[in-house]
Amino acid sequence: MTVYFNATVHTMTTPSARAEAFVVREGAFAFVGSSADALAYAGPDAERVDLGGKTLVPGFCDSHLHLYMYGAGLLRTADVMGVASLGELFAKLADHAARYDGPFLLARGFDQSKLAEGRFPTREELDALSPTRPLLLTRICGHAMVVNSAALALVTDAERRAGDPETGLYTETAITPFYQLVPPLTEAEGEEAVLHAAQVALASGITSVGTLLDTPEQLGAYARLHRRGQLPIRVTGMPPQASCDTLHAHGIGTTFGDSWLKLGGAKFFSDGSLGAYTALMAEPYDATGECGTRIYDPEVLKQRCAELQKKGFQIVIHAIGDQAVRESLDAIEFALGDEDNAFHRHRIEHTSILPPDLQARMAQKKVIAAIQPQFVTSDTWTGERIGAERARHAYPFAAMRAAGIPLALGSDCPVEKLDAFLCLHAAVNRHPWSPEGGLTVDEALYDYTVGSHYSLHNDHQLGRIAPGYLADFVALSAPPSPENLLTLKAEQVYVAGQKVG
Image 1: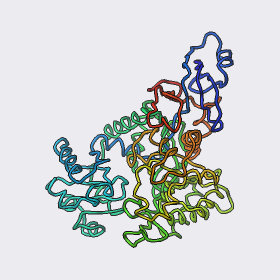
Image 2: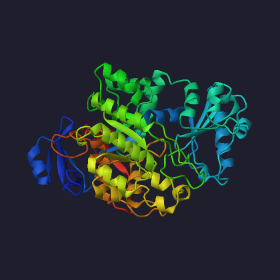
Image 3: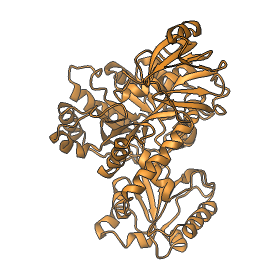
Image 4: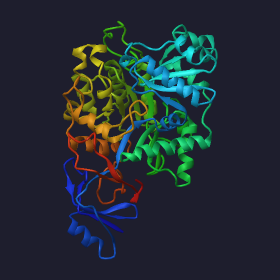
């Protein structure tokens, strides 16, 4: 038994609740209260940790990311996030090609809107960098890719025609055949990828994640580490909806597992991204005159969501454009019928463009919005894409919360950096292009702990510093405020009562 005292403890029993101390026994909180009461509860034989006035919070929970993919990228993908010109991009690609001798060259992270040239690179430009080795260059959002001729030579004629073979630009499902060409990681490499990514998470106090499971091999990497007691963080995995019938046939559905590794909701994509002009909008984009990409026929989406709900799956739908959110809500409302959402906890991921009528519908059924605040600081071109009027309804976090929509925070890493304090800063302070609509610090902390765990069906045991909850907590370098979120550090990180950082 260990008593931690002389601290300011954000318990998250409510957003503003505070305590001074707590007692940890066998990996869980046994007592929370004043320093004097905690010391008395623990008794003279307990280990004592004087926190010297530090601020403590529950471990953060990133509710939506791609942990395995991110870790795999750390092993073999060039990070080109933040490049400011095609010249800088090509220099990074050339450096990666010189250092990495694998059969494919992979890179991710550029945003053509933020390049000096304001355009995508072309197939011919990539050919000059890599004439014989296939090169796959993925946009930051993951919804667009430029490939070279060596990569095009490996796919079928029909797969080439699904995009633009002249420029090498492919979007949405047309990029899948190229990803399928890349050899998968070995089992050992997959485990290494998870461990690398988990250490990045822990560095800023993220102790739990909700991650997309793209393949059975990814789940296998988590499961092997878990069996050996080597999984550093808690993982809830969300499988593609297409795999859920097989899981159901084996008696597996949402919440199957334990506090370290469990199954989450069935993942759907209803559209693409704003950056690739593939997010589905009710009215056309200003530049293209098109409305984006619809992944599912609306009636098919309704029936499939209802079917999977009956099979015991939470529904998790990627929807960025306002029309995608509308059709996703139609499907969730159809599945729920007269029920509310408290049991199923269906989610809509991103909800980037959310006008008031859609806010009201989400609030009425308590449909969870799994938001990525860092999109606000990255998507500074939103007004140019969709016009100032629609951009007023981009990422309206405060209005969503005030309406009663449950919020869960995440990064969508590797789309954005895996850093809790960047996430909190964006949630609170936003960006000059869209300054209104930020959360308070207490609200952001609550939604990044309790809110995220609620969205993963874990809030009964994680996200609060309260008796009976698992002892995942973080000591911060300073009391959090709007002014210091970018400079805060996670000085100490504990998972199940054990110091891990």
